[in-house]
Image 1: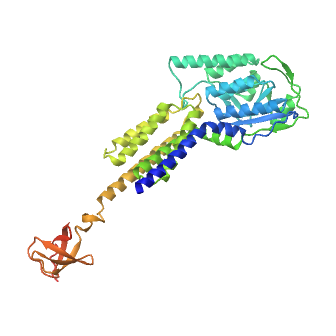
Image 2: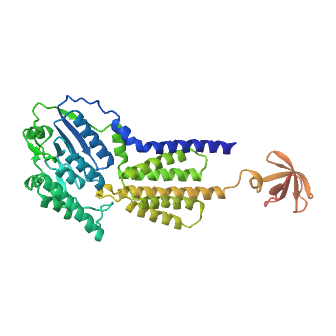
Image 3: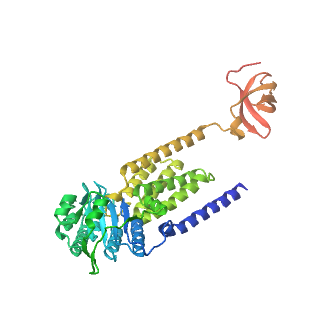
Length: 453
């Protein structure tokens, strides 16, 4: 019956996990619509969007929703407040296309003061109809790099760099900006302060804050990608801030490489605990849920499947160490596998997508401590004296009630037992030690101290 119950519970958990896996692809759609205000075509305002963090797919969906909202509300222009260390190249391409194909002017404002439009943010800023920066902010460092921020080498590096440089040059030329300086941000990883960016014609406006920016935009003439000329009028317009919904913020949090990595680790650890102690249910359900969410998150971040599989293999090797006496070889293999997998996990184009090595070290050290503790517990349990069956009574002592010659009776654990000895006659009152049990008879020998009653 217990096995049947476990099977039923397992099926229920599996059903929940499958349902969750089927629902995950629709979460971005639900997040985009949750909390979205109804359209008002009579509202003439400035729509303000905020991007603070890496450029990942959910950001592109959020901006797309913001642009749709702006068109439906007949907004005069859209301002994107940007503060980012970089992001995925494909997502950046999507965002740039959205910005350059809007029917209204789009302003990108690198803020707050001291903010950053690094890597992918450089393309997004230069693509705007009007580019602005706050004091102390910076832009640039757009050279393509590997997932851990390492330099890409070989022929592939030349191809990627040349293509990316041509792309930023094309954007800069379209917007009338200094294409050469923009190209240097890609080829030589140049970074520019807000003053340098204004001097080199990479941006149009330096603004202290949003109010200063709105005032300086008033009367600004722009030519849209379509060729239409517009004069920005901001006097009397209100700022209509459209923030991320709760669902979008949740998905954005999942798009953090460190969180995705921790979810993957928790998922694998939960499954290991379930295999070590079948039927405990909670570790397996929690681990399965974390693993499904982690795979979704890693998918949105374009993680390398080779890296994911290496990390999973590392956890499996750690788990085998509990059941196989490898003298630490499996642990060493697990550490190497997890470190290699962590190194190659993300194939992004920005250091923002490298897993923090402090997180990796914490996971590895925690796993080693867990396996060592578990192995010690297993060894200790194996060395402990059995508390049931024959092994539980062998070695215990009793006292002779009727003389053994060779059969008699003894008092053992509060009961009278028939006992047999091969040590010769043992008088009543003597202490004996149980050496074996067969049926309802105990085989005994005289205790070492040979005491007599």
